[in-house]
Each structure stands twice: as C-alpha cells, then as structure tokens.
Amino acid sequence: MTASFAIKGVKEVTNRLKAHEIGLDGRLNKASKKLGVLLEKRAKQKAPVDTGRLRSSITYSVNRIKESSYTVQVGSNVKYAGYVEFGTEEKAPRLAPVGSEWSSKHDLGNAEVIWVTGRAQPFLSPAVKESLDQAKKLWREAVRMR
Picture 1 (cartoon, rainbow, N blue to C red):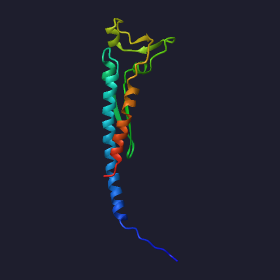
Picture 2: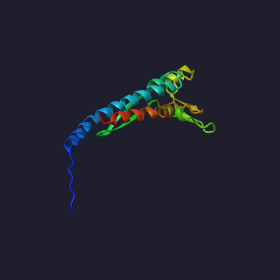
Picture 3: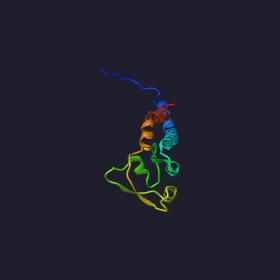
C-alpha cells in the first residue's frame, strides 16, 4: 500500500518569505532607531542636571551587526557619567574627571579632576528598564509578516 500527497502553493509561500526577508532588514533598522530615540529621551529626562553637560551628551547609536541584526546603544561620552550612574562608595572616595566647566561653576578653578563620594543617580539603567516593553513591541511589529 502506498500513499501520495501533493503540496500546493509552495512557490507562493517561498516568494512571500523572500519578500518578507527583503523588507525585514529595513524594518528592524527603523525600529532600532525609534528605540534609540526613546532611550535617549528617557535617559535625558532622568539625568541629574548641574551644568547640563551630562544631559546634553547623552546620545544613541544603531549598529548593524549583520543582515537583520542590530544593536542599540545609548550613553554618554562624559568621563564622569559612570560615577553618576553607579555612584561611589562613601568610604572610598575616587578621583572623578569633571571638566573645567563644572569646576568653574563650583569655584574650583579649572580643575579637571576632583575627589568625589556620593550616592548613585542612575539615569541610563532606569531608561532601559522602562523601555523594555516598548522595545519588544517595536521589534515584534518589525518582524511581523505583512
């Protein structure tokens, strides 16, 4: 006894998958950029402000690792951003690069480095945590078949 069957529509399905794949890279890139804008905005809202240097330095970048694979990075190039985000131990003060703008505002001359101690004032990690659901939604929409 033998059984036979036929599968119809394979070509149409294959064509649709190829069309989906062609547009997928662009949709993921666009979704990643939207997420970057959102992360940057939220991090800036949460960043403590003294001179405004830290807040204005927060930016995002989208990097294409390979086809349809992206990373979104948000951060600051200000040398003391890590001290603000993670704080310092009260018992172990650290040298922090603050820049002359901050030093001048606080009557410390043109000092580029000062001793700091203090509590953490996270701005990046809360922005990321608050954006996780939005990130999932953006990427889910990007990969959805059309």
